[in-house]
Length: 100
Image 1 (cartoon, rainbow, N blue to C red):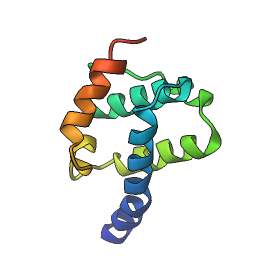
Image 2 (cartoon, rainbow, N blue to C red):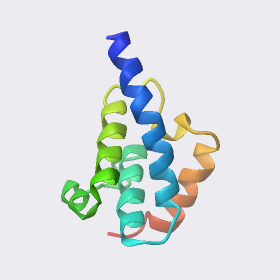
Image 3 (cartoon, one colour):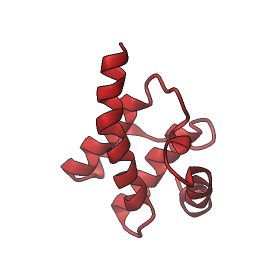
Image 4 (spheres, rainbow, N blue to C red):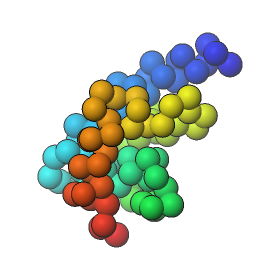
């Protein structure tokens, strides 16, 4: 189990960093990625329809799956895995959190 967790984090952490960068941009994919991340951050407050993942390019979709796998049994919340995560996720809430 520990070996699997290390492998999942080894692919999930770089994917999370890439997704955060995308979420901070201004594009249709940015909106989807931001709402995906916010769903992991606080699903009841920011529900995410899984069919929205269909709008993503293959690489971005794969990064979402890697982060989702990493978040399956988290040791830390998703925003705690990156430096400045609390601030970053609060800015994503302010920018993308109220959109359907």
